[in-house]
Picture (spheres, rainbow, N blue to C red):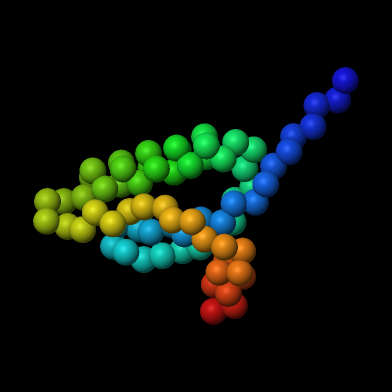
Length: 73
């Protein structure tokens, strides 16, 4: 029996601690696991900011159209 992996493309806006946004496409097999890992990464980035510095790191949903438009600029 051959196992098949089914993945899907997910478009995410990654926001850095300084507020800079980057839209990326990720091929994922388990969206819930992927999202949990990205949220954990953001929490760790925010925790390591110096006192008084912004804690803006987060992930936001994006669309394929937003992703493609970001590649043109």
